[in-house]
Image (cartoon, rainbow, N blue to C red):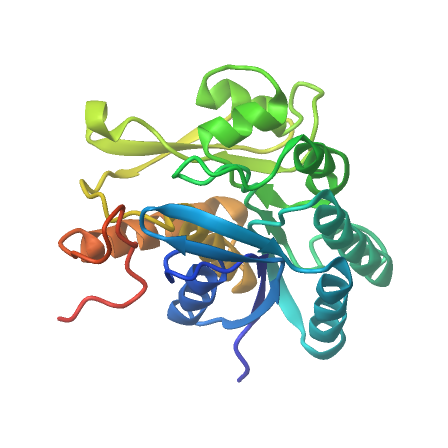
Length: 276
């Protein structure tokens, strides 16, 4: 029996912790075959991002054509898209899929959007044009988006609590995206646990709480979470169940990496399995 195919559309990470490196490793760990479309090549390590080279738009389009014309995609995950043109290209491809399926429906591959705008190091990975392209083109065709609180506030354009921001982004109060929203994060230093907020259009947000793992080896956590979410959706899980399973996977991987001493900065989250 064939595994489900999960596609990541994102940039590279030369340090192997985030981006397509994290996505493909996570897909494999969770029983999905990973395909990829590269949007940018970064020079990156545990201390930060020193260079970003956007892939030409024509190459992104060619990669999209190659993958979708050949493989039965079961889920799509986007990470760093880098340019407004790349965001719009992905949105057009999803709309093209919706035409093939008849409408934007549960029968077509779910789309997980991790709206990567700023790296943990502070490097800007997408400016105002990218933000507007997310709002105008990609979020309206997404199944679920997975911003951290800073990204969610940037997308919405104003401040608020994680719960309020999640509900507003989900469109429950007549705003922007009309898709499910998971605002990731929490205050583990204060509470000893992390709380993500899941909001679906027309519904109140619900807290999804999971243990906090004290570690600075967490580079790539956001990419790993969103790709785990996509992998579980590819296997047929609902958004709520996939979100809980993705958080559990990330917790296990942080537990594995917590004692590592890789790199000079924030070390990578584990994509290996802990030996038993």
